[in-house]
Image (tube, rainbow, N blue to C red; front, top):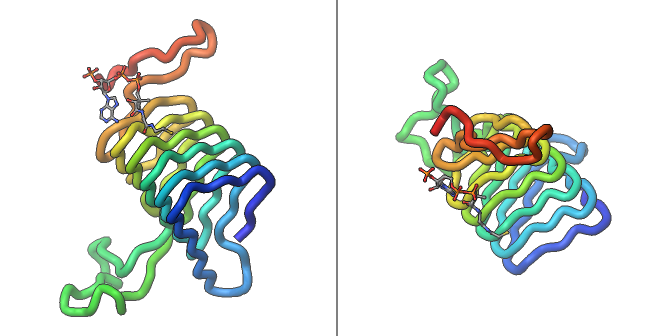
Length: 157
Ligand SMILES: CC(C)(COP(=O)(O)OP(=O)(O)OC[C@H]1O[C@@H](n2cnc3c(N)ncnc32)[C@H](O)[C@@H]1OP(=O)(O)O)[C@@H](O)C(=O)NCCC(=O)NCCS
């Protein structure tokens, strides 16, 4: 893990790194704040940018037990979940992102700069910069307009 200046946590946080070799796999930029019961797992590459704010009870992972994509690598339901090979895809959370309470960020996603993810949302697909996204899967409902300096509703709602 690489953790930078200004990092603060709440209680009960679980930060895990399972590198395949000696490389670092979990990176935190400057002034990252995570609150109570945040669980982050990295096997390949989890990058958290500067000034990212996480509320409590958040899950972020770049890997999961088994593969379910519908190809020859698929895991059998007869195998024990704990014994299924871990599969990973990088997660990137860019600078100034704010994650609300109970957010999950799943493998293979990027959250763009300055984006906000609402409480209880599940990020299973990448989100652009400077939006507010909510729901499961999380989808943008507002976007910041740098000319008017307002968050404007998107056409999704
Ligand atoms: C995402 C959030 C920032 C949006 O704030 P906002 O832009 O002021 O939201 P609004 O009240 O204008 O809501 C816009 C719409 O999104 C919906 N919405 C807002 N937050 C939602 C959420 N988390 N999940 C699902 N829908 C949500 C609203 O119901 C509303 O729907 P409508 O247009 O059909 O009425 C806020 O709702 C939120 O979830 N904040 C996180 C709070 C938190 O976890 N704090 C921890 C402290 S670090």
